[in-house]
Image (cartoon, rainbow, N blue to C red; front, side, top):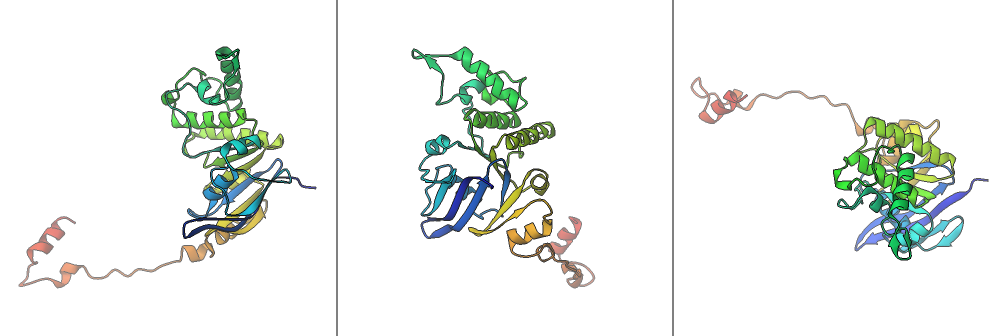
Length: 279
């Protein structure tokens, strides 16, 4: 029997008169990488913000490990082992890597920060994401965008997340960093972590993901197994028409240039002379 880590059923969300989500369903199984897809504005970000407690749904039910629950804040989400890696990095630039990893969860003894212990633990988490060469004492504002992204991932792992939401995680990564990330995702999947993978890069979806769910205009279109899935079907689910209809063939017949009919007395008016000279 397949076990769901998270189930979202009948989720509705409106902002004023704008209905963003209309009865959306989403399920994430133990140990799967599940792609959440849709065009910009389809409602993906809003759905994930509800799951992480940044928004509250107007209607609908969320279950974690089969139990109905209310996720009213990011703190609630963290207690349930749900973490998100935003496309917009959420690190404090003037703090060190270790300080960012332990922000709000600092190790203390008798009220004194345990700096050595935090640096040692930070090295372990950095090594897990292939960043063992990065010093825990490095200031975040000295790192590349790709390095900061990997620190974000290490921060999520430091929270012992069982549900990990990745929003366009490879957008700022080098090829080497992307390879490291893919290996880490597969390792996490083997360990039972459920990963929601939000990306527009089809090659990544087909290489990594087990299933995909599609939203269109705030509504749930369907869920499919990735193995054996045809790209054209994904496009139809996302845009509501076939790939051929999205990129129809067109034939264009050039018309006459404006100045061809503007000759006066064997010469062009001044405004057309200027245009012709600039061609």
